[in-house]
Length: 66
Image (cartoon, one colour):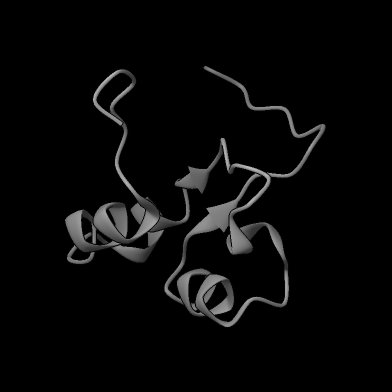
């Protein structure tokens, strides 16, 4: 982690927990390792995170930077 620092999903959720739902809806988690259980749509912690307003990117998604 020290070579390429990025926060864990739980850290991001904690950091933005007081943000409005409109802001949370803009957050998509990307770069999930093949061993990360959050890649599974039925993973309970992923579903709980999505219920809080966050999203998980899927292959082929495109985002506008406008």
